[in-house]
Length: 344
Image 1 (cartoon, one colour):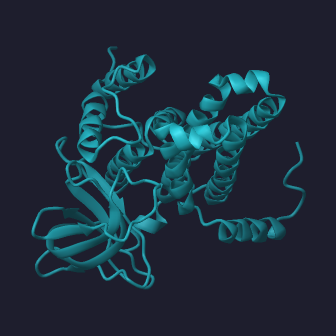
Image 2 (cartoon, one colour):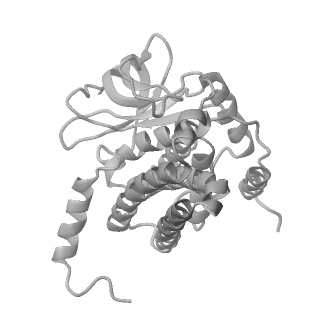
């Protein structure tokens, strides 16, 4: 039996990534270059394997390679691939190939985005929206308050949507505008039941996919250290490289184990394992950034624009982790368990 179109496309995409055969973009490239890069990837691979469908490791492998290349690129494409998986989980047909999707689900006191059933539109303000509007055409947006978080599929067209990124002043992730999304009667339709977005297993599986993007960026930073002559001639730089290897190897094994666990039990959320992975990856990435700076010296952050931008991007991106809040939750879950959870 011949290869399916999806499987054939996946093999072609993997081959192109391995050959580094896609048009280049650096972490410092313009948004228009980012749009070109996004479309180049989507032409080769319009969809990744869904989490839990038997090839989760391959999905995360692709996301980690995107993270190693450019975190703004990874942020756009990870969200798009996540949106396609959400449509599948909802039992809905996939959107047209020409659409590029974002997923905006952050809440907070400034979140006023609501769905108007009579007009099938979304209005209000949504915080923490990331999108290059040269390429992103649609978004999945949570539009509710309290315990209800309905998910709306929204078309992003002027004058019904505008992104205000004027408050973003940090150097990290400047390659993709992030700010408040302003909706004014944007055409929309609801997707799934009111609690669908947060209750589905894929909510947690997707969170692990973001950690794979972080991991990829950390490996690119580590590779700068490995290729540096300082790692060979300076014993302290070599020691930092050894410690980086310890951290990344543990993170990689945890990613692989979790991918297998999700494929073996796709209906489970794996919330504990995902939270543990993201917390670990947060710490690993911070350690890699710090050790790389110590191993390479100040020149790497002052004179190597791409490396410095990648470090700034990763430092900003991993703050999606909930830090001590997640670790507190992990500790409470462990305390409630019977028996020693760390026995071999």
